[in-house]
Length: 169
Image (cartoon, rainbow, N blue to C red; front, side, top):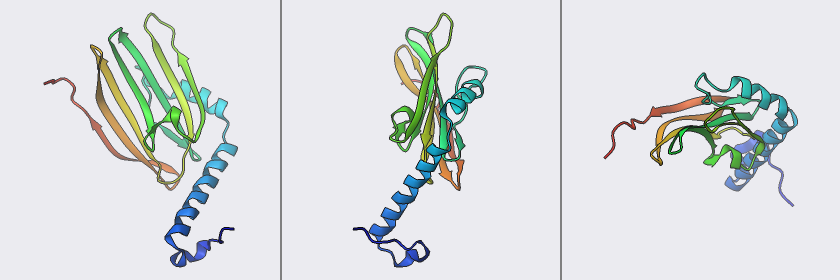
């Protein structure tokens, strides 16, 4: 039988109890996010609004502890493409343990082009990265990364960097 954790008196809790309390709170936040979420409506909205004029994803969005992650892979030729996808706590959004929904849509046209919207339940402290890459002559290269953290129920950017891929060794 587990011991009751007094949230009003955390100073007297053991490290083990604090870790257990953090897991319980995170699980409750995720459970509420799932209960209050309408995956179909959110997915449809962000397929319309979550991509820029070049058909690439905009930044992820946090809606009541549901992280909306847009992604895309746009082929330029057989050996080159541009892509951008979201990682949450080190896992790709579509592979995350707290994935709520994931949908892929293929765009019409002569080249292969796909877009995706994934919904992931997240708790405070979640680390989120929007990773942009391109492939040229079958070589995948990082183009840029925007990093965020979930704090106070909102998504805060903590760093952003672009990578110059015009020079090669």
